[in-house]
Length: 320
Length: 275
Image 1 (cartoon, rainbow over the protein chains, first blue to last red):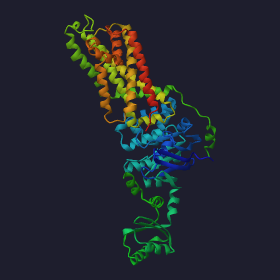
Image 2: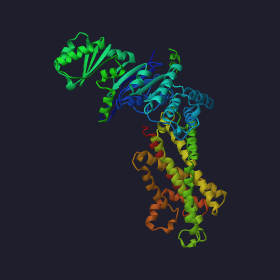
Image 3: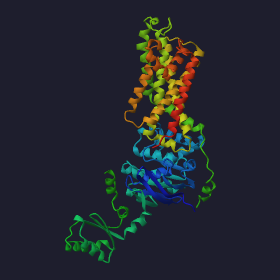
Image 4: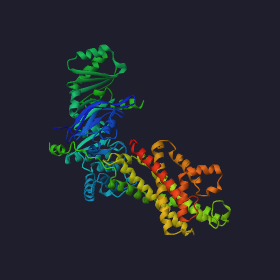
C-alpha cells in the first residue's frame, strides 16, 4: 500500500542557507506523525512545502498520490491546515469563519450547515459559534482553526505547532480533541512541535529533526528504547578526563557512552544499583560529579541522544 | 487499507481551479460587507470627514460671490461645485484603503487561509476588489445624499446614473493603486504614512476643492496626470454640471487609468508571497 505522504530528498535553500536538507520520509494512512525539533530546525519549512505554499528547491513530495508542485490544486483539495500563526478572521464570528471556509472550498449550503454543526460539536464550540473570534480565548481560537481545518473532511490534516502559546489546560484539551479526531475519523495527521510531551503523547511516530535533517524516525517507545534499558546522566565538572572515560568503557554493564560536553550519557542495566559504583570510580579518578541521575529513558533523552543537545540548549543556540 | 479504493480512484485526474470562480468571489465580497457594517466607527468616520468639508468649507464659501473664482461658471454656487469633489475624495480615501487592506489580511494571517484553498488567486482578488468597490460607492452615495440635504442641486436621474459610472471607474483606479502600494511597499514601516503622503496631494491636485483654471499653469500640468482630476470632473459634469473637460474625455482617460492600475495591482497580488 502506498503511503499517504511520501517525500523524497525534499530540500529548501534560502540563498546560502539550507533550511531543509534532503529530507525523505513517509507517513502511513491514519497515522499521527510528528516532527519534533527546536525552532528553526526546518519543521515549518517542510510543512510549507507539503501544503504547497513554498516551492522546494529540489526533491519531491506526494500527498495522496498528488505531486505538491505539479498538482497543487489536487493536493489542496485533500488537505486541511492549521498554520502556526493564527489565520482566522478575528472580526468575524467562529461560525462565519467556518461558513466562508466551506464556501471557498465549494461546499454547497446544506453540506456547509451539516459540517459546521459537526465540527462545532467535535471541538465543543457550540456556545462560542456566534462570538467574534477576537473575543475568544487563545485556546478557543485555536480550536476554531482545527475545526476549520477538519471541515472539508481532508485526507490529511496538517497541524503546525498546534498548541504553541497555549496554557497547559488548553494544551491538554486540544491534545484530546486531536487524538479523538484521529481515532474516530479516517484521517492522517501530521504535526510539528517543539514540545517533547506533545510529541510523546500524540504521535504514533516521530521524526526527530535538527538542522534541516531528519535524524531518526520511529515510535516514541522505540526511540526511547534505542537509548538503553536504563539511563544514567552524569554531570561532571570540567569534562572529566580521558582515564575516567576509558575506565567507564571497560565496565561490562555499560552498554554505551556518549559525551555531550559536561554531560555523560550511559546506557546501563539496573541503573539504580550502579550509581554508588560510578561515584566511587569518579572519586578514584579525581573527577568531581556535579549531579547524577538514573531513570528510564524519556523522549527528552532520546532527543539528547540523537541531536547531542537538549531541546532547550538547541533553542538557545538558535537565538544566538 | 480501507482507503485504498477511494485514493486509487482519483490520482492523475487533476482538476484546475477556474479563473473566475463565482462562489469564492462572492465569499470574499460578503466578508468585506460584513466587516464594513460591523465596524460602526469606520462607517461613521468615513462620513464625518466629507461632511465637515461640505459644512465648513462649502457652506461658508457659498455665501461669497462664486463668479470671482476662474473656472466656476457664473451663477454656480460654490457648494454645488464642491460636492462632487468631496464625493471624489471619499472614493479616493476609501478605495485606496480598500486596496491597501490586503496587507492587514497578510499581517493577521487570513490571506494564508484563502491562498491555500483550491481557488484561483484571480477570483480571490476579484472578490476583494468588488467588496472594496461596493463599500466605497456606498460611502460616496451617503455623501451625495448628505449634499442633497444641504441643498446641492443634483441634475437629475440621468446625470446620477452617469455619475455611478464615474464612481466605479474612480474606485477601480484607486483600489488598484492601493493594491500596488500594499504589495510593493506593504512590509515597510510607516506604510500608513506613505499612503497618507500620496493621498493628500492626489486630493489637493485634482480640482476637487478649486477649479483647474484657478491654479498656476505649471500646477495644471501635474493635475492633468492625476486620475482623480478626471474622476472629479466626470462626477461634477454628471451630478451638477460645470465640467472642465468633455465627459467622454474624462471617461476614456479614467478608463485607461483604471485598467492599468487595477491590472497591475491584480497582477502583483497574484505573485505575492503568502507568508
